[in-house]
Image 1: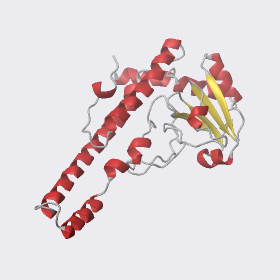
Image 2: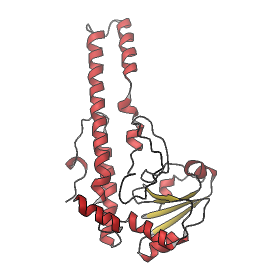
Image 3: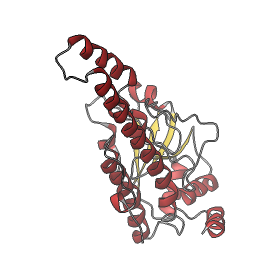
Image 4: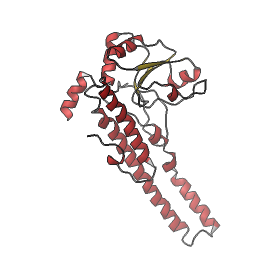
Length: 254
């Protein structure tokens, strides 16, 4: 049994994270269920759902609590600065100053909304040297494995997400087309589209190299090249839950 959305987590409404978190749950779980039903999803793929989504759910819950506490602080400002109502202009000015100092994180936590990552997931080819911001307020785009592919608009006016394939997409930015990865995907019957990007905007946003993007738009592997068939097989094995080391880990923890 798999739980998603409000069946798995209910939040204080501040921040509006309940619906966002539930939709991301469905995006994560949906493609994994489909991959298993199509036969190319491994036995460890579905187990990764909880491992990826639970930390994000906990992070979002804590953020909604912080926003609720801020609302309580603002209520104190109203009571102390405006005990007789809104007629005193000086009191209103002082209340506004204090509220502005408290901040507007409830509506400006872009790190919470866009910066969540699955860097520790067993079906992500993690980069141990990658820097992924954990700032709840600030979103810092990166191509580190585990994050959602940063958004750009291509020169023809099409958003990058509308150019990705239905399943996995190998995004090639000024690099070779990753023939070894294409062959490895074909051997396993994994649908893999190739998106070649030469626009300066793409190189500026993503750097030059290869990015493997999952159906939920999260980057699952990145590299400058992949010409070795054994390495390509290992990558595809890991990202779809067939990795033998992953199986051992799951047996120990479940």
